[in-house]
Amino acid sequence: MTVTLKLEPLTREAFKPFGDVIEVSDAVQHFTINDGNTERYHDLANIDPGEDGKAIVSIFRGQPRTLPFEVTLMERHPKGSQAFIPTSGYPYLVVVAPAGPEPKPSDLRLFLAQPHQGVNYATGVWHHALFSLDGVADFIVIDRKGPGDNCDFYTMEGTATIPEL
Image (tube, rainbow, N blue to C red; front, top):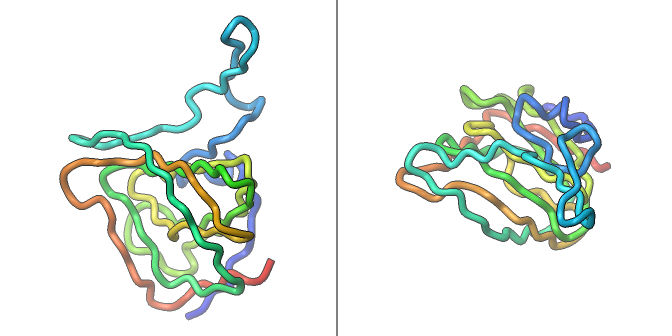
């Protein structure tokens, strides 16, 4: 079975079943700090290092992918969340499926993330690996370091196609 994914804009409401959108927005709690010089956008993601885990910060450098693209492999992190915050100024794609059993191609959703938007995958949410579009892209990643295996991979039966944009 092959499914063609429909591109959706990345919004807090649409992404809520999968985690958090990390962005500056009037919809989130924010307030002025540093003698009025800085606006703090507060508590934007539920960073979950899981039991016995420690939150760590890394930089991932993603090579651009070519469209159309066949999605066959998904991953999840069963012990903690994983946040991606872009720093390179490029839009990128986010492919997700709900936490739970291994996904089918029809379970996948495709979001277009803008350069100012990060995502935090909730614990156990299925997602595709980093998907840069327009060039080599760096992301600050906040995820879990700790005992136990925290990455499951699943090769789907069938494919989901990301069409040319």
